[in-house]
Length: 57
Image 1 (cartoon, one colour):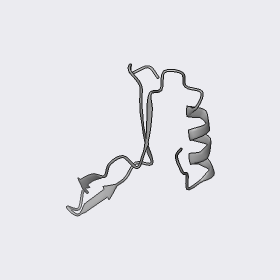
Image 2 (cartoon, helix red, strand yellow):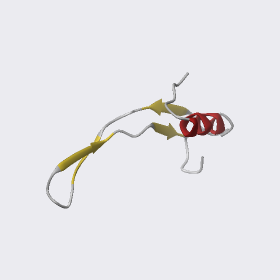
Image 3 (cartoon, helix red, strand yellow):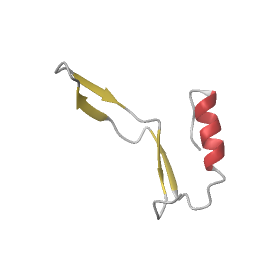
Image 4 (tube, one colour):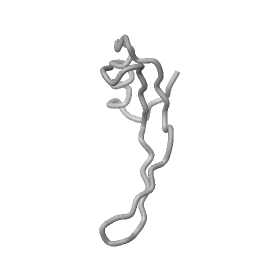
């Protein structure tokens, strides 16, 4: 079971329940770090990572 912070996240998780080829959903799976145009550093944590055996989920 995954938690959600917004109705949009809840709706996404509900819709993913009906994707037959989906094998895994991970919440906040990793943190992305990147440099901005002004040289400062930023990070972003995706809400979910969805996996399926093919690229056509």
